[in-house]
View 1 (cartoon, helix red, strand yellow):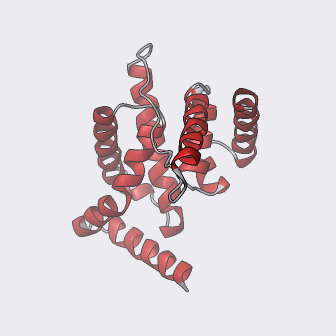
View 2 (tube, one colour):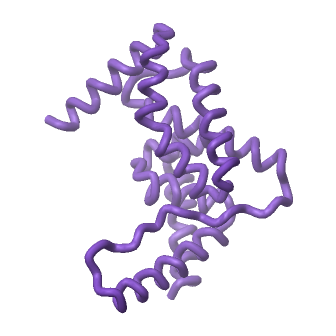
Length: 180
């Protein structure tokens, strides 16, 4: 039932966005701002740059609202726009160092010694993800950190599902080698 409600809400939001409804645009920002901001941070952008790129993503979304097909595509459509905004930023600022990746949370309720060990493992994983090539890092971020399905993540990355799965597999193999 909850999944049906979410689907209906996305369809309704997509329909209202398609008519140029500004309240729907504000709702889109309310729902997705934090997710897109975290996506930018996890791709390695600084806090300030992530804020700017998130705002730019929503501006592009509003300017290209006619490309949104339906509510089911809302997630991947918005992440695709954010992906392109990030990629354009990296091209413009080639050679500049990426910021650290945030978004790994410490497990709640563990004892302090266990938490230190967990923190060290998460830090090691964070460093390993940070060192992945951009396309592989993006695959990990979209699927495992932003919780997009393979299909949504592939569409957001503007690649076929098979290509996305291949990138994800190569990323996981590289992470295994670095972390283990």
